[in-house]
Every structure is written in structure tokens, then in C-alpha cells.
Image (cartoon, rainbow, N blue to C red; front, top):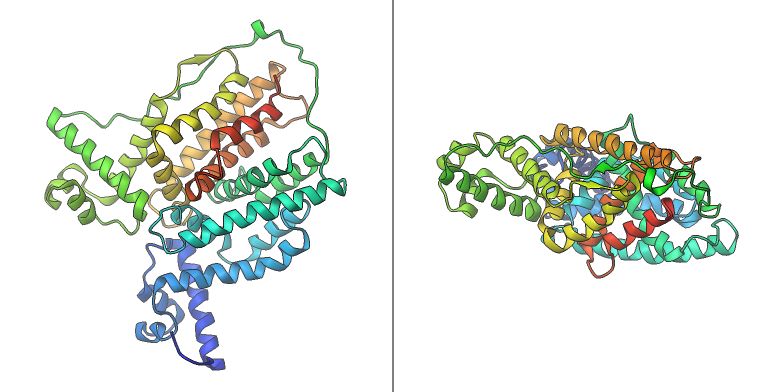
Length: 410
């Protein structure tokens, strides 16, 4: 870094570097964009960039600091309570690259080796503490009904917000962060739903709990299947630790203990290996479920049990999902089409469950099944991100169970 007070020209160059990095981090992801890429986009040389920033890590923190500084005035005006939250979301939408950069960073930095991990861990702790105070103040002012627990809201509301940002980036025709926050804010002003159930419990329709299996790519000799399984397992761990963009095929080969030619024999491109990692993750999650439950409401309540089971048995799968799904919000990421299709399927399937629960009398008639589905999926993703930063502060299964108990009272 340059010693002494920077000149006006130096400040302009520094801002140009941050502008270029913001755009590249949004389109390529932090791990993929190089210092040379940033320098070229800023219209300066690589050595010229290094006079202002010693590393890409420093640039990333400068990008984050700019976003948070620009948002601070909005947050100070009303925090995460409503309607300030929707106004903040509107502000984020007009900040170039904010949604993509922050969403990718939130997932990527869950890896403990990431340069922004400590910063983001502290950020989420600060957000939870500030949100609890803000929701208590809003409740005292009559803006949040007494039925709602401020401490629960302080965890769940920011988590859902994070998840909604990812959903909007991948399925913008299905999810709007601003509209969802407005709807959620209006609901906080009212008591929890109370309604008469018209359908006897024994008349409700059983539903399948296990999703369709992903395509099976495991054919071949036993030795080949075992080696491919080892490759996928080690690649999964590397992607969780470093992200997809920063993991080379040579890194995978070294971790597995095979030659690059052997690795390319099984997976001809880096992209084919990535897709197999994603399919294997979904297969592992699907195999843990049951076959059928008594009602759609019970299927939805089982999401909390699945979250608990995943945290206990498969924390690595949570890590790779958080890193790769958030990385895939970047327009050029090779896994983007996979996650777009995956989230569309999740939204459709979960909306159908809420619609059936409503027909069964378990969901209040004035609730929108599509909104409930998007909020639940977003909440789950956001809680997992917070959990990866601090596993002692957030219980994903407990928070999901609390949310579902309020939406689908027994």
C-alpha cells in the first residue's frame, strides 16, 4: 500500500480499481477474477494496481467496505425493521453489482480460509444483535405485534433476506426481494394466524417425501465407480474449502492421488466434474429422506428434521451447497444453469406442498402458497450460511421448526 496521504489522482485510481473489481466480482466471482483482470478493467497496469492494493484480498475488503458504508445511512434510518428493510433493498438494487457480489461473498466466505471469513462472521453477529434491538423497539412502538419473538426475528429475518437475494438472482421472474420484504413486514404488524380447520386429519392426502433421483452416472466397473466416487468426494471438499473458481483440475488430481490424465479420463472437463459433484450432493440429501408422510403440512414440517440431520451427518454438503450456489449467482459461472433449474424445481414443489396444505386446512386461507414457498427456501439457505459462520449461534433445524410452527399451526 502507498505510504502517506494519497493524491486526488491516486484516489481516483483507487476508486476506479474498486469499480472494476465490483463489476468483475459480480460477473465472475471473487475467486475467479484475477488482479490482472481487475487492472485491465480499470485501465491501468498490474504494477500500477499493486501500488494501491497489495493483494486481491485487500480489494475485496475495500469493495465490501464501500457497500457497507453506502448502506449505513439507510440502516441507521430504520435498521432491518419494516418498511426500512424494503427501502434498503431498493437501495441495494441500484448499487451496481451489489446483489451478485454480496451474495457470492456470503457463500464463498463461509470457508474458514477465505480472507473475508472473519469480517463476515463478525458482520452476521453484529446484524443479529442490532436486529434484536431494532425489533424490540419496533414492538414497543406498536409496529411489530406482540405475537412475534424479536430474538427469533433477529436470526430469521436477515437469513431470509440473504436467501431471497440468491433466489432473485437465479429466478428473477419468480422472486422479488423488495416485494417479499414488504409482504413480510406487513405480516409482522398482525398476530399469528388463527383459523378453523375444515378438513379432518384422517381425510388429508398423503404425499411423497423423497424427490425423484437425479440421473445415475455411476455405471461401469466397480474399480472405476470407486475411483469416480473418490474423485467426487475430494472435489466436493476442495470446492467447499476454496470455491470452484480457485480449484484447478490439478488440485483435484493431487488431492485424490491420481495423474491428471487419469482424472481427465473420468471427467473430461472441469465443468463435468462440477455437475457430478452437484448431482452427488442432491443424491445424498435425497437418500436421507423417507418415502411418504401423512399430509403436505407434515412434509413441510419435516424440512426442519432434514436440516437437523444434514447438520449432524453431512456438514460438508452444506458447505459445498453454500459456496457453489452463491458462486453460481455470477452470470458466467458454469453451475448457474444447474442451480436455476434446481431452484425452479424447489419453488414449484414447495409451492405445491403449501397449496395442498391450504386445501387440507393447515395453511390459513389468506396466505399465498408461492410466497410461503419462496420464504421457506430462502430462510433455509440463509440460516445455513449463518450457521457456517458460527455453529454455536444458529440452530438451522430449530429456527425452521419455529417458523413452520407459526405458518402451519397444529
